[in-house]
Length: 374
Image 1 (cartoon, rainbow, N blue to C red):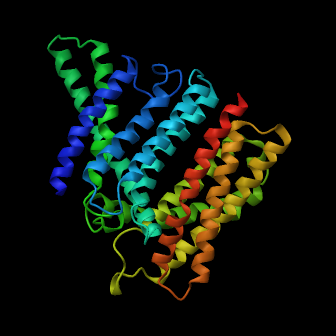
Image 2 (cartoon, rainbow, N blue to C red):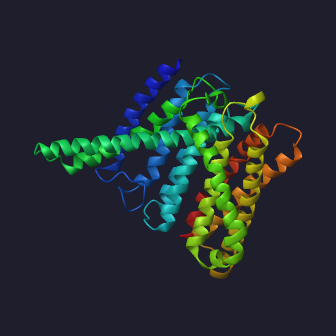
Image 3 (cartoon, rainbow, N blue to C red):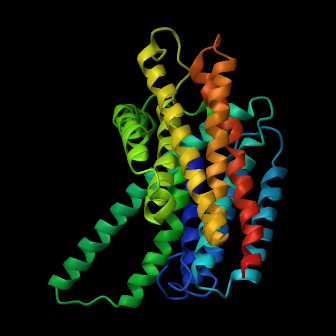
């Protein structure tokens, strides 16, 4: 199948997904947040999107090692969604919101896992490339969503000038269609299913722009980390132990740094003069080291709060994510040190890609555990 045919398939699939999510929304705002939309919409939206992605990949992906993995991933997504729906589907509290966010994340990781599973020989590089394509798909979807909002605003304004008032219910249905159609359309534009994830073109387009922006932001992020680790934490050591907002900021910073590092070292395999210089390598290693220290501090703070005030669902989630990011950062540092005689960029990519399934494992474990707090 050619890339053009694959894109046509993505467009057709987007129309079907848009219609499905518009029906799921039942005329209410298509927001996958408990209490803000139709009952069970927050449970169904992410899995339905994931099933659409899997159907698209099953139809368009080049032959690799069989496609049974897509059916397995679809079954796993459906099983977890049913479990969450039966145990937490009627709730609209913070516990349901936490479950909704992790169900959405797990749905996407199931798609990524099924995609990577088709390449047994080099799964770590494939997993890393899938992470980069995930970021590109998210950014592409954001561009499509912003364009759609602008078009809707202009259309609404033109009709208002003409004295025609569009029914709000129609606009809500249109929004429900867009929320379902945009993700697969963005994926179809960002990802070429006729190539493996690692073989995607990273020399041009949005991937190259993301990489350049990440490398420009790298010195600024390093400066922020230096301020955090060398000044803020020593002078305000108990702040994260006492204030939830400070702990949220630290953990958001850790996640953002991981994404920044992943995108910054992405792209074509560096050869000859394209190999990143020693200064770039030093900046990346410094960021890993400083983020490790920040991660240890955040983990100590949330663990202390859990011991003193009790283990809540949110604290359990944060502890787990702190451990996951700590293992990814620590594992990356260890591999860079152990394989110092090899080109460092591929080593770092393999480390991040090889350890990334830990995030999916934790999301699944948390979803299984959350109903116990009910």
